[in-house]
Every structure is written in structure tokens, then in C-alpha cells.
Amino acid sequence: MNKKTGIRAQQADQTKARILEAAVKVFTRDGYSGGRIEQISSEAESNDRMIYYYFASKEKLFIRVLEHTYERFNHAESLLQLDPSTPVQTLRELVAFVWHYYVNNPEFVAILSIENLHKGKHAKQSSELRRLSGEAVDVLRPIIEAGQQQGLFRQDVDIKHVYLMIASLCYFYNSNVHTLSSFLGEDLAQQRPQQDWLAFISDLVVRGVSITPPDAVIV
Image (cartoon, rainbow, N blue to C red; front, side, top):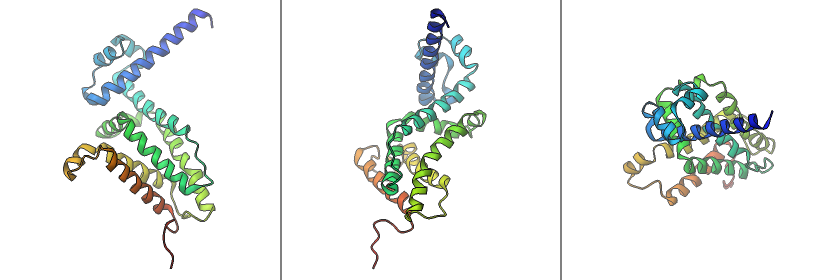
């Protein structure tokens, strides 16, 4: 590859990255139906032609946005230094990571909510999402298996069930924070109720997989 070709490839990657980040922002704000190509190109300081050149269509761009949001989550998760030899504490750390990721990345929650409104039709077209979801589930595997080997966790635990439990407990609160705040008469976006919920769901997940709750009193 000569120097000019290398520069062009780098510029192309930068343009695609800007378009992708702009698409995340626009779709998060306006939804899939409301998100318009011209808004995305303006946000990316690009043009409509470049979006169609790199992504072919709005639908394929949204599919790439879905993949991108999961890739970012998996990358952040891969940076964790989880120690399976202390499965109870490590499981709590993983729950805390997922919780804080949802809180600090509202676009992740928004994009997933948008795709569910469309009954997952874009996710079904992605060949990457199955691999990406597998990576997320596999993070749990050594933790649960270590807990089983140490006699702390039940042998009948289904890894996917634990993943669903953690994801749902973190997702529901954040995806419905505004309506729940009105319904319950408390601003759930504040730090204190968030901390209380994290403590509660951490206990709930550990108890859900444990043979005996770790803090149970045996008489």
C-alpha cells in the first residue's frame, strides 16, 4: 500500500466513524422512523451520498448502529479484570458494571428500545449480533462455573437465565426511569435511588444462583 492509498483508507475510516457516531445520536434522539439521512449527514459533517456509499441504505446503517452499540458494550466489558476464583464478589462486580454502563450510556438503552419497537427486524438481519451476544454471555461462564466448583452456586443454573436476569434488572429501570419516577413519586434518576437499586439487584442475582444465600444465618 502506497502512502496516498493509506491516507485515503484512513480518511475513509474516519468518515465512516463520524457517520456511525452521528447515526447513533440521531437515532437515539428521533428513533428509527424519525431519524433522517440528511440529519445524520449534517451531524457527521458529511453528505447523503457518502452515507449511501458506505452503508447502502438507512436500514443497513441502523443495523450497523445496533452492532456498534453491542461492540462498545463488549469492549468495555472486556477491559474488566474479573477474578473467577472469588465468584460471589466477581458476580457482584459484573452486575455493577452492567448497571453503570446502562446509566452512563443512555444511547445503548435507547437503541435497544427502538429496535424492540420494530420487533427486532433489524437485529434479525445481522450476522454479527449472535456472535456479540455470545461474547457477553460467555463472560458469565467462568464465574458461574467457579461458584459451582466451590459449592457456592447451584448446579442447575442456566447461564442464559443469569444473563437475562442481570440484563433485565438493569435495563427495565433505565428504559422506564421517567414513567416509573412519575408513577412512584420519586426521581429515580437521582444517585441515591440508583445506588439503592444496584445494592438490591446485586443481592438478588447472587441469591438467585446461590445454594445458600451467602449471608444467611444457619441455626
